[in-house]
Length: 111
Length: 120
Image (cartoon, each protein chain N blue to C red):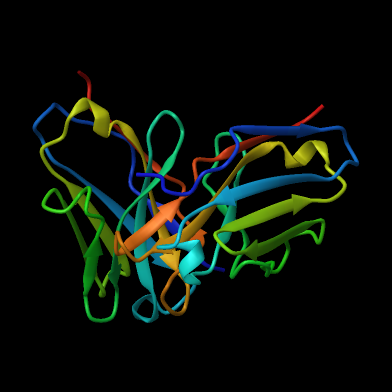
């Protein structure tokens, strides 16, 4: 069950900045649990993009950034590129479920 | 480099069980937990459970409790996920993913996925 809500799609022109929201509740993001983001290119497995709210693994371009506030988190892509077209998912831990939860997913399109 | 290689696609009849394997390499297998995540057409991600490869402790999602069993073979650096009483809605790609160094986990490396098809 998805308890983290994301917009189904976002789009922007190449070079623009786009943001994806991830809205949770007091039992997950609002409880202080970290938020992580994954990128899933078409036909491939998800890949870790941002961990612990705002950290980038080695090799992830710095145009990707993350933030968290209250019961929500955001992923920003600055300088959108065609290769960024993918599905993006947030993830956190939920204390009421005693398990891990993913967002509903957002498809990013470069116009 | 860390690699997780999963077993091949499966087609199962309703009511049957499926067992998917995930062979790890490039790191010390017993230092980390292994998670299982599935992606049904939709295409949302759904966390199923995890096992700590060192002591074999497991934790399952409430949704799959009683139907999923995650095990590991430390001599083979391999984790397994078995799902029983299959229904058509279990048709999905199943992924193994390594948990980060400490809980609460993020998933830092993923397998290539295994498609399980349960015809209706």
